[in-house]
Image (cartoon, rainbow, N blue to C red; front, side, top):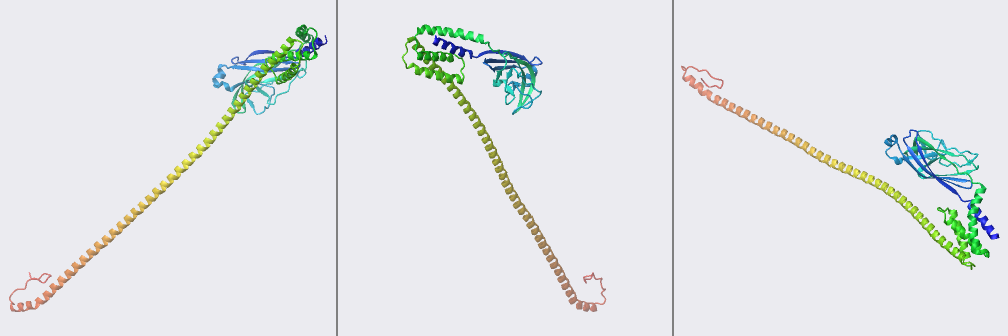
Length: 406
């Protein structure tokens, strides 16, 4: 009876600490009844600790908001546990309300940021001070992500009403544990026939605990640690000689189940690590691509600026050459006109000199002719005097200005 009592107390304590959970689904409407929000949450209680996990949240926008905001992924479902100033975020449009906690019944530590986005699947943790806690009302809002660090609250929806699970009475826990452990105890007694060594009882205790842990749908880090410890102790006990073949078979099966579960957990951890590594690699790749794009943009801008500078210098050189050619041509043209004018002046001076020489020659020729005529007249005058004397009867004719008789 000592061993049966020990097992009964062990399983009573074990099952008394089992957590209970329920999943609820809320459909909330905005003040205009045009927008709808559907929120699924899981409420679990373990002892005096209550956890509310928001599993999924969907929004169905009305015509007014959907028409104004084309990108619906920029509209988020949000709620608050603080009012006023929020860390790294500003909310515009309307002043939101935070959900209230009755401090005399529930203990809650407010978050650092003061707001929760449903798309991030937030988790709220409370500690119950009362056996009959009141419900929690969480106001829900639809907000548009305007830009980095700024949300605009568009509308308020109905509150989510969280009915907190009440603590089980001691009698109900003991009855449940007794109904479960009695069956296990009777089965064990029948198997052992009342003559089981202490190490076999210890082995069966680890077998039962391993089966309980493996049967959980989700295991915490603490569960995995306790599973490893219990399996190691059971493995050490398995090397001893069991008095009952069925007990030995149970031990071997528990170790085999543990091995399979451990491989499953390792595969899950490996997949999680690979997913995290892929995510980190993708993030690093995106950062590298962004940096490369930035470097390429800088290089392209520098190259374009260099090309523009070269083009500018090229046009300056071409412009300088054109100006030099035009200056040289202009100088040659000006020199040509100057030479032409000088040549014209020289030609004119030569022509004037020739004309002057011709005039001078003509004048001298005329003067010479006049002189010769005068000398001829002077030589002919004595003869005419003699003739006049011999011919006195001949009338004297009228002379012209050249001394010739008419």
